[in-house]
Length: 112
Image (cartoon, rainbow, N blue to C red; front, side, top):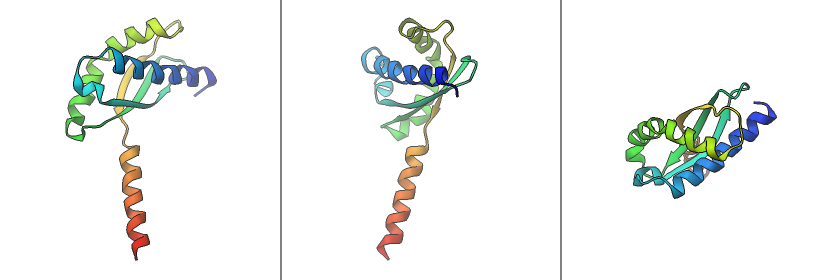
């Protein structure tokens, strides 16, 4: 990802966080945390990674976030000064879960 891509990705993370906090009415989506984003070099496509507090509703939240991607894209276009807003795809961020599993394994090893 080039420097401009990194700036766009950072702006997407920040602004999506604001939108979710202040403008979304769905309570399930209010519990979403945007963790990071990647943008293709030509700025045509963005993958936005997120987590949610309620793990049982993960599949519903993934579906709802992707269904609302055109709304988010429209809102982002109003807030980020860029000629063409990338297409957005939301992906559940499994790295936090992975990190937690690794921590538990390390704790188990250190108990012995």
